[in-house]
Amino acid sequence: MASKRIAVVTGGNKGIGFEICKQLLASSSHDVLVVVTARDEQKGLQALHKLKTLGLSENTFVFRQLDVTDPSSITLFADFIGTQFGKLDILVRVYGRKFKIFDENHAGYESLDR
Image (tube, rainbow, N blue to C red):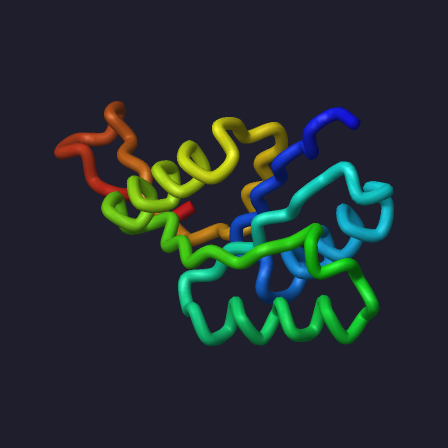
C-alpha cells in the first residue's frame, strides 16, 4: 500500500477549516492523514473529539498546535511534520488575519488597512 498523503489544515478547529477537515477525511478512503491545527490547544482537542463523534477513523487525523503568527510555533510545527512524516502533500491555509500593507507610492509609506 502506498504511504498516506499528509494534509495540514490551519484553523481546522472551527468553521470552514473544520468543514474542510471533515470533507478530506470523508472522501479520502483512508489515504490521507489530516493534521488539524489550532492556536488554542484545548479548542484543537475539542475539534478532534467532534471528528471522533462523527465516526471518522481515529487513525486518519491528529491534532498539533500551530499559531501561524508566531515564528517559534511555525518552526516547532515544521520540525514535527519533518520528524513524524518526512513530507507534506497538502496545505490548506484557512486562518486569515487583517493585516496592514504599505503603499510605497504614498508619502511616508503610511500603512493602509486592507
